[in-house]
Image (cartoon, rainbow, N blue to C red; front, side, top):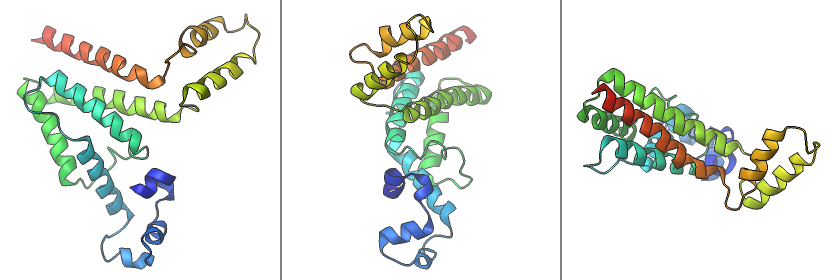
Length: 201
């Protein structure tokens, strides 16, 4: 995980891992069958780091907690989001995580089809936000300001007026950070799920 965190998932090979450990690559096969098993274990650790919501929370509060925790962990392990749902061999932490979150919704009266829909909506929002957040070319306020100002300077002031207004009135305002939008958007998603749940019941 440290190797993938530092250099990206493509840098993780049996050879590179063996080099980090100071052993021959063939020695790894005494412990794991192949790279896929290593990836399985890494993702299981990611789910363990996301953790489980505290008992007694409402279903919407549990989903909110899980989303915030997942984003934090996935921003630490930026390689993980593309692998979260790709594993065919799940570890104990992964199974426990999914079982618990299904149980939270089932206890609130959701049918299995509704559980599937809510899970898809939440994961799409969290994973999609993380993918967009990690792909942005600048992260610090200084980098964002320099990049946005340079982009605006390429065009006449009357060209792309709406994009210019968005940049000036929002992106270039003090304290702007794309990540600040996560919890606001999360609350919109959850408010919609809560409203639909109340209406349905």
